[in-house]
Image (cartoon, rainbow, N blue to C red; front, side):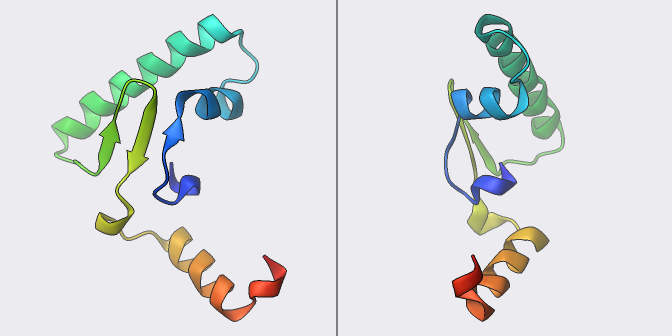
Length: 83
């Protein structure tokens, strides 16, 4: 989700990037299990900065500080022709 920089991460994108060695049905099960566990854990920690939907996830970028995002933004401002 960090790499999507606040954009919607669709289930199919996550499965193709993370669970690429599994068949589609198994990938869906693994994805949904992981989303359920992540949601449960983050709710227990009162981390409410992710919108969980059935087939997508969105990290609320405006509510989180992230060194990676800061680095990419700074690099884009300094050297836009290289990105």
